[in-house]
Structure formats: C-alpha cells, structure tokens
Length: 122
Image (cartoon, rainbow, N blue to C red):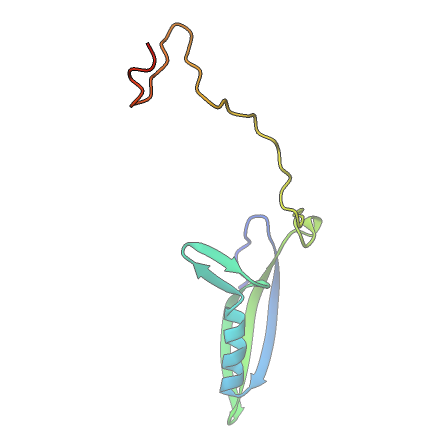
C-alpha cells in the first residue's frame, strides 16, 4: 500500500528488489535511513524523502538474500522546480517600517521617567 499523500508533495510508488549478502543489504538500508533524521523535533531530509511501505526477505541459496521493497518517494510539485522559488541570496527583503527610537507618550499623558533618572525630569 503506497504511503499517504503529504500536503503539497507529489508521490511516486516504487517496487524494487535487491539481491546480496546480509551485510550488503544492511549497508543499503543504512544508507537509505540516513536520508532522513530527526534533530530535536525537526525532520532533516538530505536527498530524497522516501517511506518504506513494505519489506520482505527470501533466500534460495545461502548466503544470498533477496529483499523485496515497496516504497513511496515524495517530490516537490513540478511547477516549483528543484528550488521551489528559493534563490542563493535567500528570500527577498521587504523593508519594515522603522520603529521610533524612543516611545512617544500619548497626548494628555506624562512621559514615563526611567528608573535612576527620577530627579532629572521635572
């Protein structure tokens, strides 16, 4: 059964089989696992985001194993391209309105005097 569609991502179902020794298959699956890792509560993806939906092993001649894998690859929408609109310079800067250096008191109120300057403003 293919992986669930993630909002904003396209999915590609994959079926493939690998043949090799236990250690060769272990190395392959270890490399696949390294595509995605968790850092605190953030998901970090390095390479293709893939979910493994099914896995089975068979062996007809020791020490060779065959792994049958059903997986789903997740892709950015094709209209976004590989960069999804990002540039090497980062997002465009939109200048924010400059905040006043010192707060202006509302009309009809007295300005607050900072602590330590109590005798300065009279």
